[in-house]
Image (cartoon, rainbow, N blue to C red; front, side, top):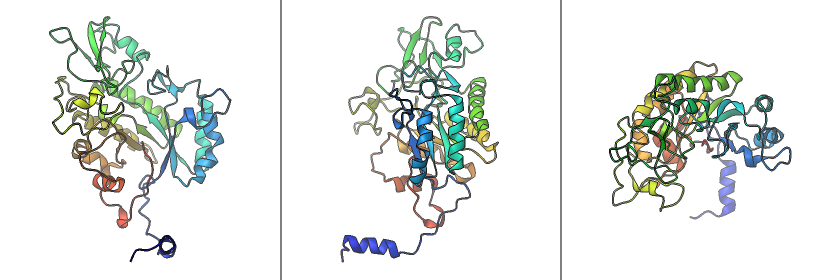
Length: 354
């Protein structure tokens, strides 16, 4: 018998309460609200949202009955990619506020029992960052290997056929070094060489700076780009079935014509994730790391990242923000596949984590 709307509502109201999942770790089953600062709330009338605007709307966020929120990047930036091109990881961009504004926001959020995550970009910087300016100056400076550099191909072209997510070559020529540098996204966002221990340690210190300020965790931007194939092997074309990646720019974006075996989601990235997790675990309470998985096929990442999605790793599942599989997945099926069955068999709470 098909139930009408009123009967369905009555059954839901009278149903015995669902046994809540274990919340020993607050992030299990949590709901997080994304605050895209620039468009969220403008406190001073300059047409750009800001941190003080977020402070003014904290009661609104609390009343959504979420566990916390994550802030889009607010670091000092030329804003060529609206904050995802960072010049200084330890300062607030003047268009969005000040460090005092951030500390007030953090304090007021915690008073309302809201967790605060920031959007951290571990795999690239702006080409205006002092690290890159030094790295590009020569092949023998202190930061020469802090970014991914490669010699030209025999014909003078790029070292490989890798493409930017936004189309076009992922390699740009730098005459100061007579080499190409790699950028998975815009040419103003050079990729850092996180397989260099010095580079990774420098990035870890930037994350620790914010952990020390009291944030509850970070969203890690573009974790599929933490590393790439050290031999810069060419990506093969996609199969006749087409790409399994849904990307910005639609089906005509050249990026979707390759199988991204060597420039995205490589095994070397897992060791970097493990080291980032170790840093978060040194804090008490332990900090959360939530990875964004974008422009990479779901089956590939799921098959490789099991150790970092387990309960023992104390890390929430990375979220496929712009991916698709040949088979459709609902959010519940994805969560079950990545994290395993929820505690007590209860369905996971929905919430945006990337």
